[in-house]
Image (cartoon, rainbow, N blue to C red; front, side):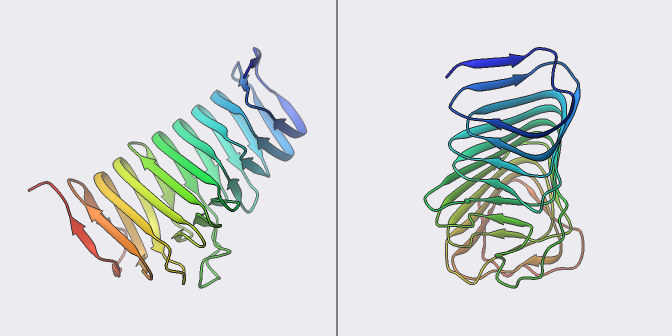
Length: 239
């Protein structure tokens, strides 16, 4: 696809920003912008030094959203990722909610190598996880989360791995701070490979059901509060 560059950046307030097709929209400069309705991506949008705020964020259709510096915030109840890639290589990303696998047959990828990704929503009212603020693979889909650096924070809501789909988290570095990890009532596969960095769990701990596994290697599993791990732990490597 082709590339279009807004050399002086994006500033002011607008209703909607939509990027369609398989091209690349590059926001130059360091200005800030606020969208009052939505940001919808179907191509590629790299953010490097800009500040962008939106009440609704959707990444789908094979889109790539990459934040390398600056800030991105979405105040809507959920940020939806279907078939697409959401990468944080730096800067600060703050979302009220994050739901991947949004759509049957979709393949979602989330990468974190630097900077911070914070989920600050606090919806934990639904016991099976369907309406919680942080869900991986909502529909019959796949989600891959790769964490090699940076910090992931979700201290107000439990991370639910899987509803109709399967999900795999691979942490080789960085720090992950979670209220806890939950599993839905369905027996879909969910794995967490912890071979580097630090995973800190809060009072919810790890509530497991169905096919859930944690493999831990040369990394640190920490506690933010007293909790219980109700998931098999397989030790790998190290000494």
